[in-house]
Image 1 (cartoon, chains in turn red, blue):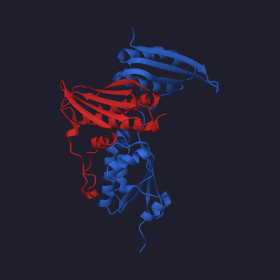
Image 2 (cartoon, rainbow over the protein chains, first blue to last red):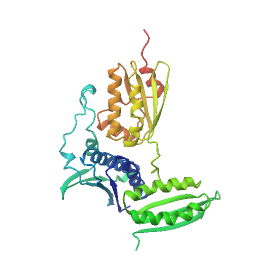
Image 3 (cartoon, each protein chain N blue to C red):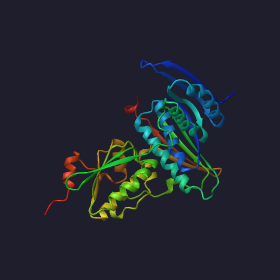
Image 4 (cartoon, helix red, strand yellow):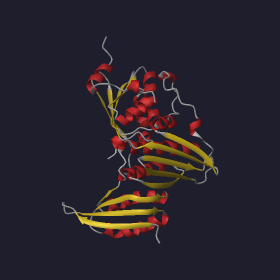
Length: 143
Length: 209
């Protein structure tokens, strides 16, 4: 099951669905179960769309790198961009216990990832954001 | 040396058609896409074939490489064949839903597809429109949805709030385990309906008198 794949896309929303599909297809071809494949799709969709929407204030073309790595029964997803400094882990957790009328719409992306991932790391180096998301591939769901 | 290695295998299927498997390994960048299309030309020009793209051994794909998959799917279809690679076509619809009304005015929305970026964008306006009527009672059937991202959760939350503001409500039916987990982590577990569609719908219908 071990291996790695990197995808490089432009900072355009329409580039995200095919990249997500390709990543999912690659994980399936490597025998990764549905639970972790869906998690990878969620992670790429959440982080990359956030980066495309809010990461840049110029009209230049930028590239976003998506890396998938499988080793020792673990999945690692790394997303690197050259957008504004943004550490999603700094954002406060939303209060999901509030009555529905008082609940703000939005702000749930990183919250979902935090809940579902084993561990998330952020670093800013050479003016680039890099988020690494780790998830164990559960033995019970392995093929 | 070309960073993309392409290996093509053909076999006859029991149905009498030809299945062509294209094993890609290495790097699929701009040069790789040109090389790939060149190699596939004879396949496109032959009898309609079932084309399988095996991407297990790819190590890097850039934006040109991602787009070339959509092009291959389109070219293969143009020549009357099929291409087995999950839906990378830009023409994919994302998600859709069908609405039907039950006795008592409860509407069932049967969603087909994922509430990811593309899926949510495809259905959001129509879903929200249905939440704006007079005391809307909506049952959103999620049995054909494998995943929901935060944009999809946001749509569900907005639908619940909008219906509530119009004196109605929205309940969520048959979520998969993965969707249930996302709903629970988002604080929407209370809106998951328990029971069969008919029982839930009958409980939602406004009582006469």
